[in-house]
Amino acid sequence: MTNRPMTEILRRQVPLTLGPEVPVREASRAMAERGVGAVLVTDAAGRLLGIFTGRDAVRVLGRGLDPARTTLEAVMTRAPHSVTPDCTAIEALRLMRDGGFRHVPVLRDGVVAGVVSRGDFRGLELDRLDEETGLWERIA
Image (cartoon, rainbow, N blue to C red):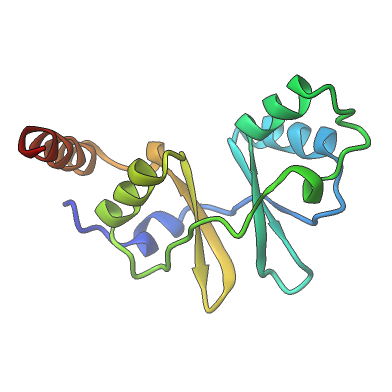
């Protein structure tokens, strides 16, 4: 089913959230322990401030920044694109494809409810996205 709502995916996850003052090293360690590719950076009320991904960690190292002293706030992507729980799987996949990113925070009333990545979606959903992409490429 390609119109699967985010609520179905979110039922089985607890997103990794950390505050903006957390050092990159600690965030990277938490990501490795949890086996996830992103940290949602939130305030005390659970509102999304930004996102920090494995790609960001590579940029920290590439710039020669000290991961023990560099905070998430300094290197996170601020105000990332997000979806709501009533968004469908294909809508989230389109957003990721069009934006060139792998993770999309899910917000319920402005508060983090979860995060989805391309790996959370099933074959039919990915097949539909590939079909759409191929159609647009043929038209262009």
